[in-house]
Amino acid sequence: MTKNYSKIQLVVFLLCITMLNILLMSNLNIKAQSGSDFKISGYADTYYAYDNDNNGNSLRQFSVISPVRDQFRINLAQITGKYTYKNLRSTVTLQFGDIPRYNWPQAPNEYLQYIQEANVGFSPAKNLWIDAGYFLTHVGAEGLLPVYNYMNTQSLATYYEPIYQSGVKVSYDFSDKVYGSLYLLNGYNVLADNNLNKSFGMQLGVKPVSNLEIIYNNITGNEQSQGSPGKMRIYNNLVVKYSPVKKLDFLLGADFATQQKSDLNDTANSASMFSGLLAVRYNFVTGFYVSARGEYHEDKNGILSGLYPTLNGVSAGLKASGFAFGLQFNPTENSFIRTEARILKTDSELIIFTKGNTFSETRTEITLGTGIVF
Image (cartoon, rainbow, N blue to C red):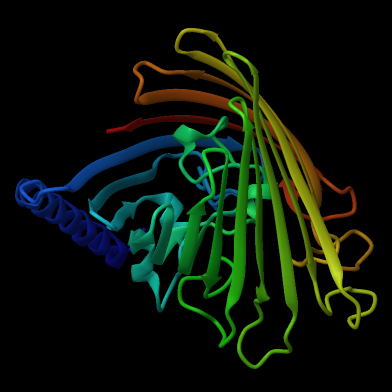
């Protein structure tokens, strides 16, 4: 860790403490307003991660969560302020830790890594909201915070989905069982845009019965940098949450994307990618959970994964599968301790993982995580 980065950490920590004090004092005044509400919440979790990939540095490949190996680290520490007053609302979340440090924008926009969310919205009509600012993504079956996921790690499908987004969201609740949103965004997983184009997105959720929820998400846009040939990408995401009986939960996520002029064999043609996950969690004793997840990712043209060297000398996109198993204990309703074992297997021709002085098509990993919501 560099000396400059340590100074930045100290400054951000002091700013967060100062803001917390301001928010707490402001809360006393805000509550005096009739019909207003101001809430402060926080979250923190730590981790230890091990894997047998000797890639030459401490950063683990394909890891948004628990990205550093062989060290006790902070995944995420955040504080959130939410304000509502009549038909207005706003959310601001400040964050710190390995997740934002290694996954949010770097120089010259590295200051953005301390802002998880910052948005404001108003409601012009009943059940209708218009919000603008910085948001976490609407795409994906797994979220950013480990406490709300089945596992410590995210699947490969989630790894290549966007984490954050900036723009305008229009959301409407059609009924108790149907809701939807439209998005105008700077782009796919960008806060500061890299071109003059905008991306469009949507979400449609249905709850036909109390134990089943089906969600479709989409982002469409040209994600190439300014001055590069345009390549329209259409990204589709399906999420299914199902609880057939009490204490048993299933989670399905499936992603399918196409992108223009991206076929490695003929750049005039479009290319596609597919990824998915299937996870199950069972609450077998009060406070104790067991979870399992299977995952698959195929992006042979490297639309999102990029290209990797192969044993035959021709670069190719990622093709991989994996399985994870986890045990979780909740000491209290707002805290968790979880351990997980996971194995990833890539296509035998890809050169990605290293064991000793040789390449390997598998990686075995073990993670331990603990966190609290307050």
